[in-house]
Image 1 (cartoon, one colour):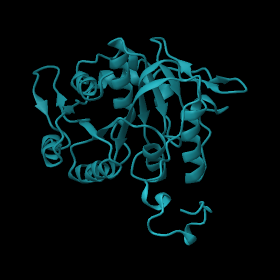
Image 2 (cartoon, rainbow, N blue to C red):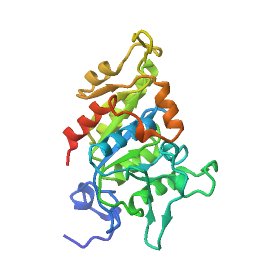
Image 3 (cartoon, rainbow, N blue to C red):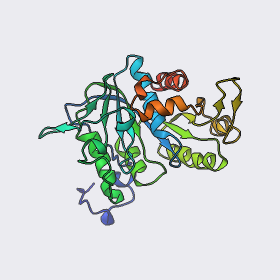
Length: 277
C-alpha cells in the first residue's frame, strides 16, 4: 500500500482512512480526571433542563460521589445562580479552576468568566462550540466521579459538538407534558440513538401540581406523556417532577443543593444502575 498523502481524492475505496470512523473525542488535560459523563438534554428550551441537572448532581453528591457540572448552555447559563455562586473562576497559565460549591461540587459556566453576569454572549455557533470544548479540555477537573453536562436545547451545533467531543456515557432527556414537547423529545431521542449514546431515562418536569391542602394531583399542562414516550422508545426509566413553588423559591435563592432529592432519586438510581462506577 502506498504512503498516505492526506489527499482523499487520490485514495482507493479500500483506504483505511475512508473505512475507519473518525473520532472527534477531545482529551482532558493530564491533571484532570472524570470517570463518567452524563448529558442532560431537551428538545426545546423552558422545560427545566438546568433544574434537573442541578437536582441530579446534588443528589449524586449527597450519595458520596464527587460530582461536577459543565454548563454547556453558553447563551443561557443558569447553573451558577441555582447554586448561589457569585465568585468568578480563577486560572493559571495551564488551565481554568472551576468554582466549588459548599458541598464540594465543581462548576464551570460562561458566567464564571464573564466580567458581568448580564453581558450577552453574542457568538456564532462554532465559537460557542469551541468554548464548550475548552470547558472540557482546559479546566482542572479534580477526581470527578460523575460530570453532568447541562446542554443547550435542541439538536444543533453545540449538542452535536458535545456528543462528538466528550465521552458521553448516557443522556437524560427532560420534557414537559404538552404534545408538542413530546414530539420534540422524539428528536432528542433519535439524535442520541444516531450518536450511539444510550438514553438513561426521561424526566417529565412540571408534570402535575399537588394541592398542599387536600393532596389531590392536578395535571395543569395536560395528561402525562412520559410513560407513553418511554414505551415507544424502549426506555426503562422515567420520573415525573411536580410543580413545586418551594423548590422554585429555593433555586432562585441559590439553594438548590438544599432541595430534597426524593423526587429525582429514581433517576439517580437509574444512573448508578446503568453507568455505575
